[in-house]
Length: 127
Image (cartoon, rainbow, N blue to C red):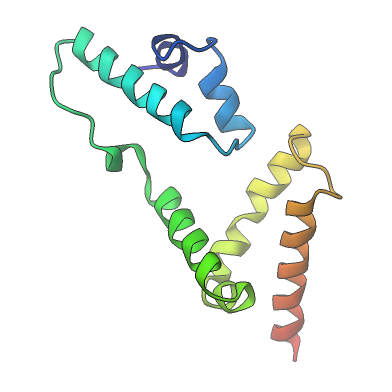
């Protein structure tokens, strides 16, 4: 099943789902549900009547992101970052990719926060 098929079945433009992924869009719940419904429709058209479990849409990396985002709303960010430093260091490739594609700018709030967090952790490691 392709992104084009899912987008079309959800009543969106053909490139809508791909665009959401490449721009790391924070999708609205209504869009998510439309895509989920579109996937359900495609499965039905293929004769697959089973219901799509939401957890099948989430890979381990995305589940980890959800876990950390919830922690960051509950705990102090530096505390979470220290516990999850490997995860944050692993985001470097994603941040660099978004910068290269122009989806983020070097002076965006997200990039500045990420760089600040990484420099805070680097300076703590050096002490």
